[in-house]
Length: 341
Image (cartoon, rainbow, N blue to C red):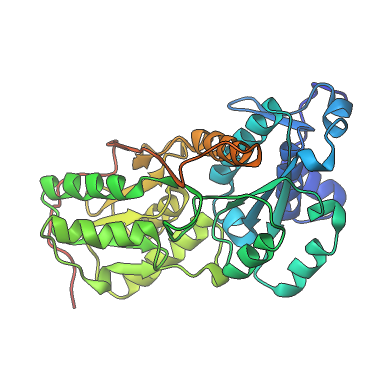
């Protein structure tokens, strides 16, 4: 493809080469990380200028690994693409190249990656993003190069990490719902995650009851793409006939699936149930109340912090990216009490 030309859409490439759209998506993510493709918000994906230069002039010691759980990447790919693209830009600006790795939960797949010296042999450092398990962290630790953790499901103050202040966002969301008159507030997301912990702590701080019947927890090992995960979780809650009057959802794509399930069941949002998402992923035609995060800033901050460590500078162990609670059209006062058995 000529430099500067628009790159074909995922569905076109999947059909042309007879592969799944997920395979195409991961290939595009790697090409973005290697500066061979460029993504422009609102315009699409293009072949980068001077791609030959992007492929060369970066010795292995000037490369940074970007590691993400494959299921999590598929779960909310648009959000993680923002982090990936911004991290790649920050690395390039400082003379480094980002190398993308999507890993699953099996030791066998890790063995294959770590056996490839071109993949891991001379990485100067590693960005670890999105729900990778302890096995991956242990294997990366064996490389003896700096690691920077980004947006992990579970916060660990002992690790070098860029965290998003979801605790503040959840608190603002629940205070907003309480002011509207909601007393039955549910949650859809991951167990033991920072968002889930912030959810029940915020309920407690606002003197609202925690009801496990209003909670649907997602499992990384059985994870579906975000919209489908939200749809199925909401179906289970509807089938139980125990509905809260408001729901906090782990991200906007899951929230979109939630609203589609509600619509299919004849339940209106926000008239019958208020919905709050997270990350502000710009759902077209869905003005969602959400906890807004600058995911590009997360990627930039993480990459720069890692390179600072590589180059011997002092960096705070925990860097926190603020959030902003944005009220749109999916929250309203409750019109009736929660449905109970």
